Amino acid sequence: MRSIMKYIIPAVLVFAIIGLGYELLYNPLGFLTRILMMAGFIAVIFLVYRWFMARRYGTPLFPSQSGPNRAQLRKAKRTSTKRQTSPAKTAAFKPKSTNVVSAKKKPSRPKRRREDHNLTVIEGKKNKKKNRAFF
Image (cartoon, rainbow, N blue to C red; front, side):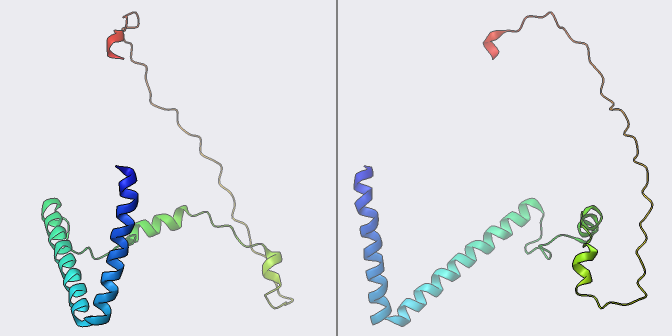
């Protein structure tokens, strides 16, 4: 079966390319109308699918925002680990002046000690033999 398909699929593709070329040369308006009809049919199917899914799951038909919302952006800004540029790299681009104020470092806060976990051991039947049929 697979050896037959090796020959059938390329033959169908070659005939399709020949047919498209013939249609494009001798009937370009018909070719264009067929392409537009296919695109319209696909668009209608897509809109019906979106409408059905929107009604089923209660989501909007066309969501207004595709990117992260404002709260997600704020959280990303808080948790980002940007490194500050080293002064050796930026000194070449800045004009040299005699009144250079050094940046003060923030005093580092001591690390908070983590609390112990709240896991407890639940006593069970430890001597019960396991039924090997269920494994």
